[in-house]
Structure formats: C-alpha cells, structure tokens
Length: 206
Image (cartoon, rainbow, N blue to C red; front, side):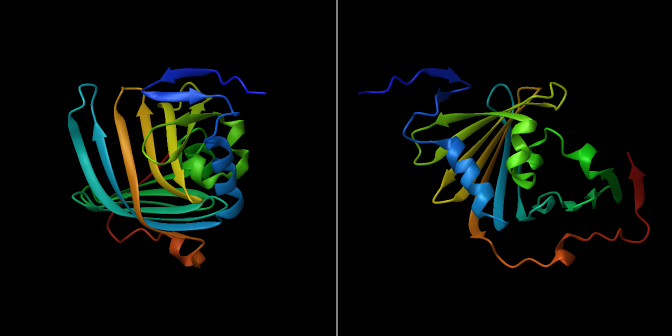
C-alpha cells in the first residue's frame, strides 16, 4: 500500500509529513542522541528582504552538551558568544563590552537552544520535516514563543552531521550558516567554555 504524503511549501521549502523518505525529524533526534560534542568552522551570510547581502562573517564554533557552547567570530568583526552552562557571555571586542545573561533567559526559543538543549527542544519548538534538492536532510523548527525574534529555523543534516542552519528572523532577514571541517564528538575540555572578561571592558548584565 502506498502511503499518502501531504506536502505544503513554507519559505521555499517543501514541508512533508514524517512519512516522507528524507526524515529530518529523525535526523535531528539522531543528532541529539549521537552527538555530545561538535567542533567546526563556519561562514555566516545575512541577506535582507530583497536578497541583498548585508553581512558576511567567518569563524569557528564548539559545542558540548548540555548547554555549553562558544562561537568565535573572526572576520571581519571579532566577537565571542560563550556559554559555560549557567551564563552566556557576549563579548564585542570593538566595543570593548561584555553582555552577561542567565542561560535560561538567553536560550529559550533561540537557535542556540536547538543545538545545545537536546531532546527537550520540542518544548520550545514545533518540529517538522522539510526538503531541498541539495543532498541534505532538512528539518524545520518553529518557535512556540512568538517573541523569540525568529519566525523559523531550518537545519540541514548529512551522515549524522549538521552542515547548514538557516534562520528567518522577525525582520524577514535570512541568516545562512554553513559548517565546514566538522568534527563529531571531539574531546572538549570544560575550560574551553569558561570566559574571563578582559581588564578594562564594560560589563553589562541583563
């Protein structure tokens, strides 16, 4: 018997039920189950509503569950976003300013929660399959919190590795993050996720 697959188009993606061949929901759960740590280089491109590129940055990221991560933006604007599992530190080197937030407030329905939060992610997101003809298995995540600042987030997987994230924010900007030199389950020390503010920087708490 052939199964009927209902399909709709959302944001250029083909959204299908979980009976579809490319099961992005399963890929997401496999990622949470089999990936306790991740290290990769990334490039990030932001485009506006007209498709014009308004930002392009590069850097590296490291992730260790539960809830520890760091994103080091190297070009062209140096910035660090680090979570030690309790607090999130955003360090802007040009502004010489560090913003500190409690992890529970900083994550919520943010894209970081998708990667760091594990299977509990479905408490904050509605998860659906998605597909594109690019060789990746895609999953669509819709934030349940309407004030999250994001309309939807998409993740593209292949061979148990995360290769792309696409973030659609409330301003209709699209941020595409492409990962390269991906390492699954590298040994990462907890000290990697500790942040000590440099002397002389302004510290802002939220």
